[in-house]
Image 1: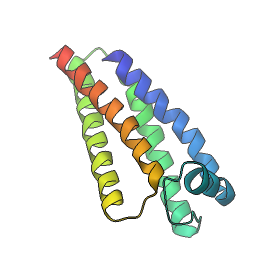
Image 2 (image 1 turned 90 degrees about the horizontal axis):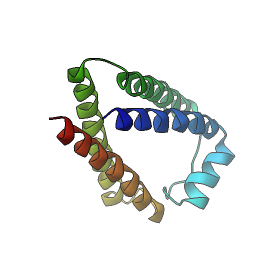
Image 3 (image 1 turned 180 degrees about the vertical axis):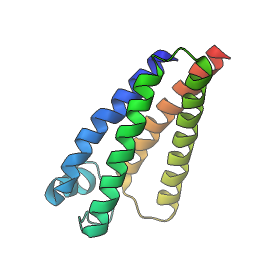
Image 4 (image 1 turned 30 degrees about the horizontal axis):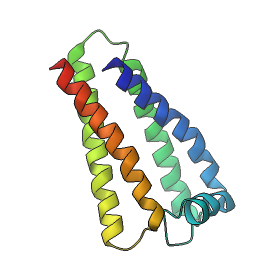
Length: 132
């Protein structure tokens, strides 16, 4: 469980650093529209997009640090709680991705995120099963 919490925390922390580059609209278009083709709609960075991006980066940093530090906690109950919330978050991400596919707001590259989400989801479930 400690390895899962630490790995997920660092994955998200590095992801936050990467997300900072999405404030540059040209970079966002290249990554999300051209290279990965995750979204069909052109990537734009307006006021609300900047607000949302800032919100996501801030929350991701917080949860990344919680996961990283949780691996060092002595209370297994708190670690279990963190893993449960991680699992719930990735279930929500999968549902949101399915909604995006059904609503035709995504491109062919969206299916790659299913792999990432499912890996983190199952690793979390396995970590939880081992401790319980």
